[in-house]
Image (cartoon, rainbow, N blue to C red; front, side, top):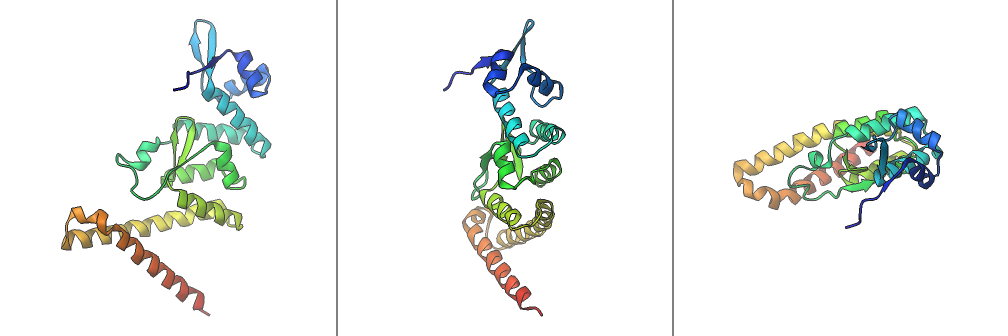
Length: 213
């Protein structure tokens, strides 16, 4: 296990490639968490260094300091990844760990505070220390692909909210079906059948939709 490093203000600023004055400004704007105090000495750690490098990366991508401050607040107060995944974790979906700048790159500059809040409300995003966790690699890849096709992320998330409602209803229908005719121990075993039915019906529905005049 790597030893935790701590830095005085001057060393942290040098490693982050900024001035001490800028570091103080970021701290006053609450863009970084408070340091650990030991008497009159402020100690910073690798989490502070990672946040400072993230701020620099986001500024280079055109984000404003106000927007970054809102993002930082969302990261600091976001739901822990354990709250998203539950005690046992997902059985099929693969969570993805991201830095804030990696998230920004996935969504072509549309990782705004508003969109981030919407994704958190949906349960797509959580936090794990200083990292962001997307609950599903498949959903991350699909939503990123849609954004790169020119569909605004806000519209993708709004559609996802509607899909969530229908998906919950389908999950309830399948669960009731199994519990009425089999038993709770069969839910996991029969889960792939439910997914296959939904995928096939959605495929047929898309066929019908595209054939409409």
